[in-house]
Image (tube, rainbow, N blue to C red):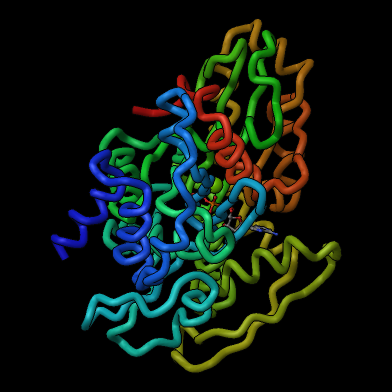
Length: 388
Ligand SMILES: Nc1ncnc2c1ncn2[C@@H]1O[C@H](COP(=O)(O)OP(=O)(O)OP(=O)(O)O)[C@@H](O)[C@H]1O
Ligand SMILES: [Mg+2]
């Protein structure tokens, strides 16, 4: 095990040539036997091009949005190669991963005791290091399947604005230990700003709100600088918990958080505000199966306290900015990304509280990943935004 970790680190070292690194990556990270003929087929090395250190370091680039709820992986020239729930099923007897993503999500609540479905990223940060490392290895395998040229990729990844230095270091180590050559870390709303194609060098201030599963992030950019950024650990997962609580209290029915999430999404996707949803769970009094009806309105009411707290947070964030920035925000739009905008009336509530115009761009849940991929394409342009 220790040897494997050492070998993985060697992939990123300067001591090996390209072919050696490729072989080591195939064997150690992807668990594949490198083809015997690889050496024979290897073309003659082209004359070395002169590149700047940062460009050389960032060859084979991919962008990852390792979200609390969803992992999105973007590869240059290929687009999104993976979009899956950030969930892993682990056999606790052997500590082996038995399923990831959608398959792991389907297993929730239906596993024997020794199999646990875990959320390796919680509230925006790594909760289980070993599993997160394996998740990155899984991602790199998927990237290789989609783009066989890419081995030991350089990775740009986003983190929430409230991430501590220790948490940032943990992300960097997990990516490198999983076999990446190099990693650049940026704040998620910054990646979203790049993903939206916002003009970063514009003199006037622009703002991004990113509400995901674990965190709600806000950032103001002006003149190519991050003027202010912040986040709170309150977002989509809290809505799910609020639905679980609301149903237990008002309907005496117990459901799991993933069922609550499905109900939340189904409710928000329904254009019919009169609709009534049927929920299946367990009676809180008898412990036996129970079915209950819950209306669109009731679900929206369960979410209201959480929505209120996030709206208040965004208001306080904007309220701390200068009159100049506030005037700019009045003229420019505020961009609202992540899963949050899908919640009924959420953009309108923020608009009313701030008296500022909110725009929800297309593909609102894919913009952090798109931004990370764009950054990976020209890392030298974004170096000053990398977190150290
Ligand atoms: N149609 C929808 N209606 C309501 N909520 C939705 C919808 N689609 C997704 N969500 C919610 O959005 C959240 C996921 O958003 P997103 O993918 O932006 O989060 P993330 O990037 O994984 O998390 P974070 O950035 O906080 O780490 C989840 O809570 C999910 O239930
Ligand atoms: Mg996110």
